Image 1 (cartoon, rainbow, N blue to C red):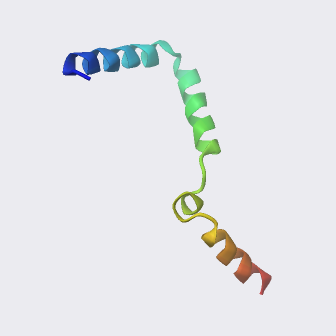
Image 2: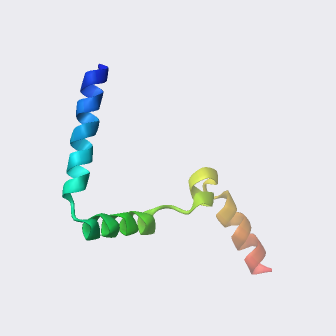
Length: 58
C-alpha cells in the first residue's frame, strides 16, 4: 500500500467516524467494553479460572 492510499483510507475512516452521532459512538464503545474478555483469560487461558476454582472449594 502506498502512502497516498493509506492517507486516503485514513481520511475516509475519519470522515465516516465523524458522521456517526456522538451518542451512537458512545453506545457502541460501551457495548464493545461489555463484550470484551477478561484480561486473565485472554492472556493465560483457562489456568487462572482453574486456580480460582481450586481455592474456592477449600
